[in-house]
Image 1 (cartoon, rainbow, N blue to C red):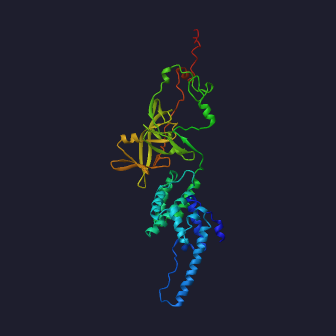
Image 2 (cartoon, rainbow, N blue to C red; image 1 turned 45 degrees about the vertical axis):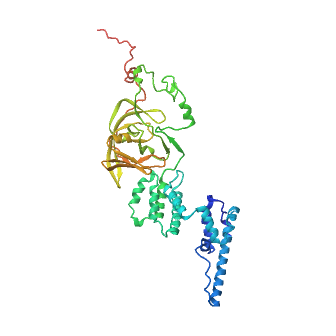
Image 3 (cartoon, helix red, strand yellow; image 1 turned 135 degrees about the horizontal axis):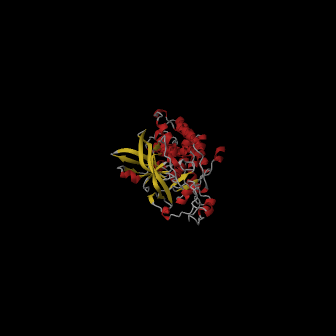
Length: 439
């Protein structure tokens, strides 16, 4: 009976699962688990007319059963709080106590099966949850579900379903591993092997840091930067720096300071610092153009005559300097297929690569999406697909093929006046009088 002292008392539904596991181990240790769960019942009385020896054997078996049942009741009652003891006060056997507790905390078998199935197929990995703990949580739901199915229908679900559920809920960081796992023969797959490989991948991933909210622009939200953002330059009248740090000289030609807005994107995304978001491509219904921040992705680059401002979700405008073509591969039916995307804008201050749904539909693609993912179809064939991540956005299954000769983009941080170009080219000062030597 020493083991019962290590079992926390049953308080409520909050600790029911843990208490049930612990109390089952204690009951099994004392060989009375089957008595408590009702699988072992009291021996039947011998038929009338039986000899004295049969009655004696029945009496001995009945005493042994009553002793086991009493021990099971003692273990159960001593491991419950006062409220649960009163709840089971009218129960006359350990099986009745167990049935009443399961009815209260697990409902009927049919209701519990529905609840467990819903939890199992809605289960998702939390951002701060490590892989081993997440898989253990899924395994617990799967085990409880199989126990109820065994009790109701006498059948159980295969482990292949559990492994499939684990794979379908993995974050985008594990996308490459999914392809590797699909190459493992079905007969050689096991839950333990899957956990082992997932833990190995998790150890190789960058360490997680504090979450941050980014809205396309790459910024840090420190107190120092917040103070700087409130400063206003009296030369260029822009917020974020002082006049002494201004890189612009006074522009005499006011016509050069005109701005034009040629694109919009109202996309917001919640990301983590450890994730390589600059390589992601996200399907965006609010983007008017395909956009990227990586100039090395672009070929056949054409520079805009002057920067075109792109309005982002927080109302700010960030400049786009040109457009080009991006070659990429898409993952369709287990294969990587080469494709290309034209008229992709280069926006250096963009936080994420955006695939414009509007531009795709203009070219004849049919976009469909659901809770699991999205697809772009053309002529009835899937041309591009993606998955819905924990942030609720669609990450596309595509890899960029970086060209051998990427685009070279020369960006000016200020509108240059004629006087500025005069000084840059080291022309002679106009105030110096040219003298012609006398013949």
